[in-house]
Each structure stands twice: as structure tokens, then as C-alpha cells.
Image (cartoon, rainbow, N blue to C red; front, side, top):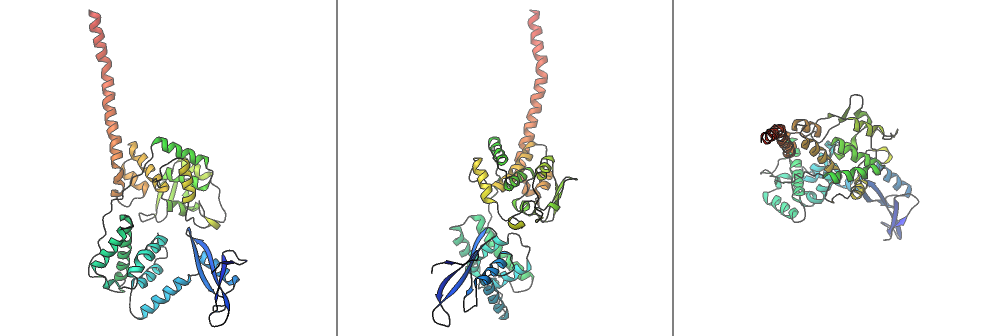
Length: 385
């Protein structure tokens, strides 16, 4: 069916056979963006659902604001409720309750995608107690054919998280075996050489955008992308020289010190009176993406495609401090808000190399101090001749 526009933005319809009557009726759809993704949803039929373009536009606005579930979510909720009435705690039912109990869940969109793509099709209608080890083996092998080891681990971790949630709240018994997560060596420490760093700084300075300022802040503080997105003006204390990071990846909220370069950077940023965020997104809401603009700056600087711009700049910040030899790993751990010292240990070789250079320098200075007297002794001997 051919798509036809209406006078309302993001609302269109297709004509289809009328349900319960003769002739055609309009089937209305809405298109909108949310969390950086484009969504297209059916909202209802002209006669069967008494749907109009104006009503579809109101539904679209509510979906964008997160005030209204999609038709799919409604169907899933209804199915989950029926299962609950029947006493079946399937993974689909557990997933629905899990999301309701965790409205502040970090990585909610990512978890939703993993569940919809990899868990729901295989285990959605099953209860945790119905799983056997062979089920997990088949899922792991299937994922390994097309996904990275890190993705496989994340999917299995999500499955285990849902089981633990259900068992802990005594919703249902778990499987008779323990889900083992594969070990993944994905400890990538990205860095830039001096030429690349200079090229990036030049590209940032030439780009007078909020995203350029975000990259500069990441380089100067080591903040994660999400922490920069969530940063509010009320979290910044320029008088005392601190930034408050609320609910970082490491756990509890913490404050980290900021120097004069960061204060100067923040003082030059424009403020939007409609938004509490330092780097607001559309309509003053929390920003959810900056990939396109950040990649343009990365490309202009000539950086490798494999360099993950925000994550990479965090590593550059840490590597620079570690290799200076002037910052111990405990201080670096606090600045990076790492939960444990083991997460900071990846930079220990840089610190050790800096200390080794300092030790070599001490030896060279001592030798240089001793050489003049040796040279004078040679001259004196030659004079005596």
C-alpha cells in the first residue's frame, strides 16, 4: 500500500479493506525519533478504531514524550498479564516487571534491543526453570557465528540478570544450573600519538559547536560520554573547582576536581534557560547522541576509524596522566571513578615506564656530574708533559 501524507507532521496513512464493512478505510501510522532511533508505528484504523489525523498526531506527541506505550508494548503487557493470571512467569513476563521496577535503568535502550533481538525469540515464552544447559549452548553458538564475544557475554549476562531478579523476588524458581559467562579479553587501551592529538585539538578548536566542547571536556576530565550527556549546571562548582558526577558507572555519586582549563571551557559555553543540562539535546531535553558530529571532527583530524572518539579520549586522559609519572594509580582511579583498582591497572605499565625513565635520567645526571672532573684530570696530565 502506498503511503499518503496528512497535514500533520509525522502522520500518514495507507488505504486498506474496511473491517466490518464495504469499501476502503484509512490505516494511520506515525513516524518519530526517540533515543537516536527512528520509529514507525501503526496507531489505528479510520473506522474500526475511530482514528483521525489529529488524534494520531496527539498519540505521536505522547510517544515522543514517553507518556504513552506503543501498541506493541500494550500487547506485550496484556500477554504478560494473562500469563501472570495463569501463574506462568515466562521471560517475557519477567522482562515487563523488571522494566517497571527499574525506571532509572542505565542502558535501558541497549538492554531492550538485546532482549528483543536475542532473548525474546528464543526464550520469551519459557520459564527459567524450563531451561537446560543445552539451551544456553545453542544460544551461545548461534550468537558466536555473527556477533563478537563481548556481545555474546552481554546477552547471557542479561539473561542471568533476569533470572536473578525473578528468584530474588520469589516470583519463580530458577534453572537447575548456574549460567557461566564466557571470559572476554576486550581490554582495549586506546591512545593517540602527539601528532594525532595535535591534529584532534586543532579540529576541535576549528569546530565551534557544542559537540566540540564535549570532546574537549572529555579530554580534560576523562568523563564518560553518558556522564557528559547527564551533566547539569547545578553539578558544577567553579568556586571550589569540582564537578559532581551523579550515579556514575562505578556506582555512587562522586565529585572530581577540575582545573583552570576546564573552568575556562565551561565559562564560554552558552546557557539555555529552558534546560538544566550543560549540553542539552532537542527541546532542552537530555542529549542522547552526538556520534555524527563527533565523527566529523574525528575524520577532519585524520584519526583511525577504529578510534572510539569519546571512549578513546577517556583513555588518552588516563594514559597521559599515567605516563607522566606524577600521578599514582590510586589518584587515577579516583579521577576515572573506577570501582576497583583492577580497572585502573591497565595503565600501570605506563606509570612504570615513566618511573623507569626517571631512574635512567638520574643515572645520566650522575654520570654527567662526574665527567667534568675526569676530563680535567686528563687535561692536567697532558699539561705535565
